[in-house]
Image (tube, rainbow, N blue to C red; front, side):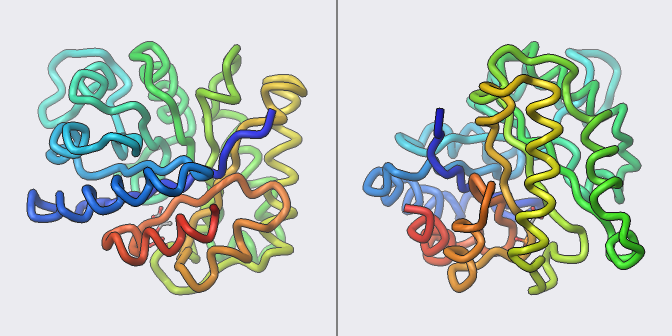
Length: 249
Ligand code: PEP
């Protein structure tokens, strides 16, 4: 089972309604680039507006709370995201882990909440520069995922994507070498097969994230076991994001 390359834009805390025209352009072009599955994760306030505009692209969120409802001022549940038109949620992004103290256990609880709400998941992992320099990148990332990922998932191939994003590559203009990406994705694949079985775990898409741009996208997307890209800065304009999408087509 080979799924299409999955290119996902993470707008982070960027975007007001004036950016809907970018989403519209991305959506219209995605209709001509059907070899690629294209998705956008705008801020919460734009999920429903982008959902209403989108005919082709998937719309998702950048986080959710781990409970369904309750006294959690300022938080958003997975059920609310689904109600607003979200089809997936990004969980465990390093900015959430670093800035909001999210642990692997919390990310795991969020995965369960998202699955219950019928959302697909993009579970993020990635090491800090010191961890890589100390030679511990692989065991660190695998330990992160062992706890963060759901324990079972019958439809893992369709429901789950994993995003490997070395923290030192996010927003810095630096990218991991293709050898390092291939080695890390191979280790992640082994864990996915161990957990979800050969057929499902073998087909889960493993995205690379960290300063992906139109100029480096093709090389990264052609690397072994790279099933797509999670894109931050370069997803903010239709022009640069579509350059990456075209590289995957
Ligand atoms: C990200 O934060 O998910 C990301 C990959 O950002 P950038 O593409 O800007 O490095």
